[in-house]
Image (cartoon, rainbow, N blue to C red; front, side, top):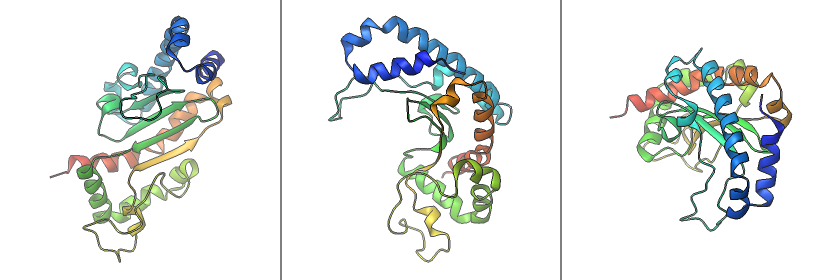
Length: 222
């Protein structure tokens, strides 16, 4: 479980998103960041029970910086209003499918898969789905998967069939996604309960075969 102080800090940061306020509260931030790191390491230990390669990563490799990259953004606020960690081989910058924990007051969620893949990776995933559609549908339509993520993937889709794939393919909708990601919203209250780690274990275990399918596509790239 995570402390309510962490949520209070993020709410205050949202109201005071400037460097002066942040520097005045940096010691508090550092303490809360350590708390989040401990929690993420516990989550990694749970995930590695069913996805053994995850034991090779760490919280420090997984947690995103709270500073925003404002170089090419019209929004010049310097800090994010959330704590996030992407657990995957290679850490938060990995091109592999993985597991994501998002902590933000009023917008907490657990998710995973691959977000914003490069063109070659996206094509590889679509090809893997096209050539192994029965296997893919068995994964995303399984009761365990649907219980947590519903019957649809998350994110933007193309209006037409992607280039290189037949438009009359029966399951063409699965090939139109720009991201291969799923998401489960969670109440803030869960993050303060001992049940949080159990929920993370169950939700992410239902995601393991989906991630394995996506990672196989990447491994099989030409």
